[in-house]
Figure: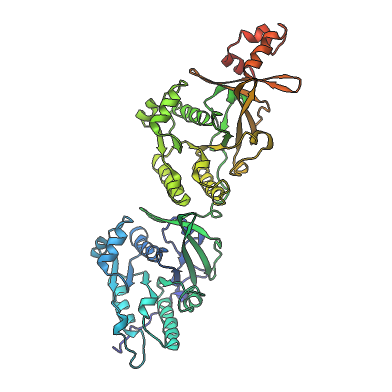
Amino acid sequence: MALSAKAGKSSAQKRSEGLQKTPTGIRGLDEITGGGLPTGRSTLVCGSAGSGKTMLGLEFLLRGATEFDEPGVCMVFEETAEELAANIRSLGFDLKKLQAQNRVAVDYVHIERSEIHETGEYDLEALFIRLQHAIDTVGAKRVVLDTLEALFAGLPNEGVLRAELRRLFRWLKERGLTAVITGERGETTLTRFGLEEYVADCVILLDHRIEQQTSTRRLRVVKYRGSAHGTNEYPFLIGERGLSVLPITSLRLDHAASTRRISTGIPALDQMLSGKGFYRGSSILVSGAAGTGKSIVGVSFANAACQRGERAMIFCYEESPEQLQRNMRSIGIDLKPWLQQGLLRINATRPTMQGLEQHLLQMQDEVNAFAPEVVIVDPITNLSYADDDVMLKPALMRLIDFLKHRNVSALFTNLSKDVAAVTGFTQMGVSSLMDSWIMMSNLENNGERTRTLQVIKSRGMSHSNKIREFLISDQGVDLIDVFLEGDQVLTGTARVVHQQRAPAASPNSGANQAKRSPRRAARKSS
């Protein structure tokens, strides 16, 4: 067919100065690109099979129709409209309904390689006419072509191919259409033909890899003409709500800094923090060896929030909800009333059963749905198999920034060796990300083991530099002063013996302190 649609005036002539951007609606992608894809231009999305090219293009199209009142056209060469509707239904979109509402048009173009015979000149004139008809039918602002390889299948003439590729991109640009075109990745080039990446105004590269037996997807904006953009490689996920890109650098350090203080749930620990506890919206690290009481500190913090009428969420990676409740009842903390009142939610999972990014996304979804004021993550060391996982710190950085922007107070426990108390070492290397750091240790002496607690740092407030003995009983937890005898730290039985031997006039021990209960002694110390 020789007819062709008359090209309209270039949208570039109609736009004001400066590059306009069309939001994709995809979480994280608009942050990386500074607002979305270039309006009235073509974006190439390339990657290997299974990397998520089609899903990205479809979500861009469907969110445009449902969220931004921009109808769209999807021309596909490998899947029928029925197959496409079934696939996209997993992301929560009803493609057939949008088609019935005339907000989205889907055109399946069947191309069989065995039926292609090059007889005479090859051009895309018929495709342009077909595409123009679909655009006019719905008044499309967005276009998705999936994929170029199928469109040019079996065409051996490379010169003709390059000419028609240029013509396709120019045709879309002249009509002011914001287009997403997908392409398979080549062996040495971003695409098989190696030309689209130069013609397109924006190029997004998707990658699907296996690391330590875990599936991981990555996204990188290779180029973006006329606009600054994030150039790093970002993890992204395909979940029930579509694609989610998890950038590190897109979240700025511009969150609010509250001056309000909230209780730790342990009165003696509040006293160590200038008598008022942690700042609202701060991040707290509680590190220590197994059995030092890290989980108890975290649950006490959540329990105090519920007592104030606030919502708290516990991400528990070592105990089931029932086991956690039973263990906390043994020290006088009953979590059941808070669960029944809807103030507390316990999310117990094995995060290593899936990728770290996928688990991080699920945590964000849980927090968005429950809207807690306090979050406990116990412990962060269970988020990865490897002690030196280089991806864990960036993931925690994203989680901390996410919670800070929502003014959520977050407490993270970290399993470490007792040597940490001396060297200041944390297994995950995340102490610098935290506003407050509580170190818990085991001390073994005279045939017994005792627990100690100290505040390593707490930004923006005065805090105690003393080491306190951490006592756990069926009445709860308490902190009392340790005793120094020469260069030795006395705890447990040695402390009691020292108290009994000390002169009655001693201000720290002897008869006066022997009469005090551990809880009363803790209130009098700071």
